[in-house]
Image 1 (spheres, rainbow, N blue to C red):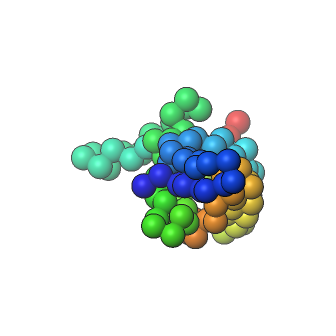
Image 2: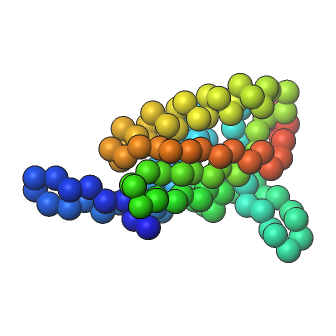
Length: 119
């Protein structure tokens, strides 16, 4: 479902792919996040996605109450606290996406799909 808002000037409709692209660009700027992960369900393989394909590691759902749920499939840096990185990701994405869309984030789910050593 698309996010919708009514203003005095008319209706604003936001496609979930727009939210996913923005959330992905915010996420990869967070400390400890190497990138988004694409999971091949058939083989169970996890692949690090390039910046052009950030939305493939993110699923955005807008419910009937116009609240957003975002699922992130991420690869994190080796040696960092998963809890700290997750908390930072949640706070940053929640603030920036709510500011960007004007809609409320109901839930952010983080799936850590892999760990990478950064040179």
